[in-house]
Length: 318
Ligand code: BDR
Ligand code: CA
Image (cartoon, rainbow, N blue to C red; front, top):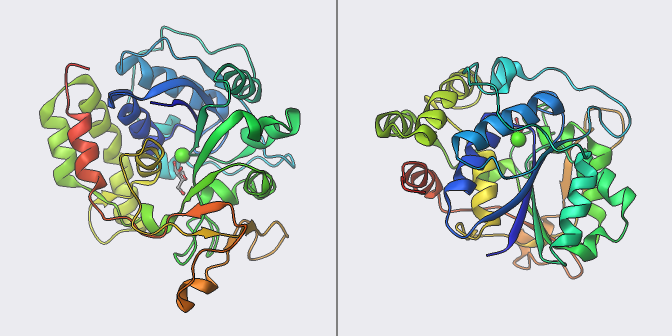
């Protein structure tokens, strides 16, 4: 098992991803950092502490980070997607643990140094914290073994604009820095996360199982399902954005297709701001791999992750 740090904006699907990681044997979650996105960075940190407490992991340090984007924007409120407070409006007891006093970027750097080059970073939120950490410690890529990012849309439409996905589009300058850095990167875009779907049957299983972990997942997903049913899916259920990226990060999901592609982000002000630009031209010609391209872009998975995820959340005794 590899030490893991998750940078997130908890957020319903971030919370489900955290629960999944806590339930998965062999995963060594060393720290969690939060950023403004689905909710404020502070609120996301509180939500994270509450979720970790339900999972019995009050030992994991949680640090809040960037409240604005690199260029100082404050993104619009996302409570119509994730509910008031970010966890679907579900009330949880105040966390017993406090946040780590460090800024998220410092916790990222410290955790990477301590892991001696072995740290895997899973980012499921706007990439501001990672960009700040890179600015502060330009050697960060040498200290990190791999980075997995949930974000972007390649052939799929965007979800905050016709072409931009939230995690890339909410801080395009940060995303451009992170995608250009010299590390082994895996990108998990909407092309796959929108096709691995949780359903109402899954949610009912989570509720019926009735452990604190499965119940929390089942309860917070209610709001997420309503949002998806009204805006994005032809049935009651949801995408599996951040949990799928977590599954790929820890090696439980093996992508069917993940060629190394040159990727950039449109940072110009205009209709395409925040769009991921992935060079997929070779795919149609039979040579998808591009020499020198660093990012493995996941374009196909087999659709079985939601069943595995629910099984895992329903496992007790861990
Ligand atoms: C991403 O945006 C957020 O709302 C989700 O938590 C996920 O990380 C999907 O575009
Ligand atoms: Ca997220």
